[in-house]
Image (tube, rainbow, N blue to C red):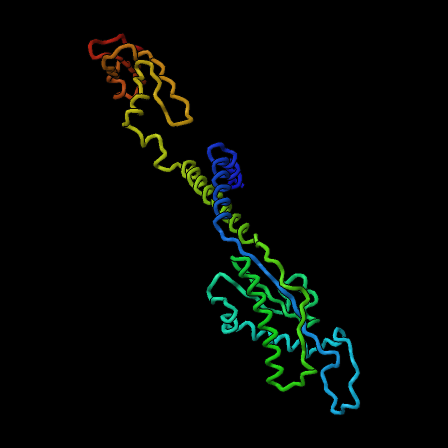
Length: 305
């Protein structure tokens, strides 16, 4: 609890809170403008079967009936979509698209699980989703177009390699065409927020450390460590002249001592104890009264009994 009270107290100080907040905002704005802007372009496609289905009649006089391709989605199409997705995520294919391995352009090809619009239906349909992220908007859209052409070529080449009848070839059509690249601001906002938080954290940490050292009585902050300096000597006065001696910070100055009965003279005080009857102790009787004599170095005062 004391920790947070100290933190809130530091924030409320004019010399700490406002300057630290202004510095954090400046750092956040600087990071926001220095972090490069990325642009995202996407495309969504789906695999479909031909109207004649996936089989070819061996008897030309008995053709197979026509069907609606949108009603013929099956596990075979989803498997084909998975094959295309795996083939597009190889380094060789990415190099053909003009994407460097450690470059600033990033290509994502999947079944739509990274797209919120396709997340709920990607498990039921043979979707192929393409997303390109890069610093140049035109380059991002160009890579999406090349990726779509590469997917269509890959699908045709695999069906030809398997010697499938051309009338049964699976086709791929656009669900959402290549989108206009849009700026992705989440990275810039996160970087700016991180800079603001870091500046506030470091600044408050330093201020708290200094406050803790002062409250803990660090040797460097003791008033006694400045003894002998001109400032300390200037604050020190002569008690006999009635000057106030500066004490520790926050303490009241000590009151001057009251004068006693023997403080009106600067001569040395001598105390002498005399016995009136020296023999009283030897006989065990009551001893006489002792005499206390106060004298000065220059003379003898009257005795008191």
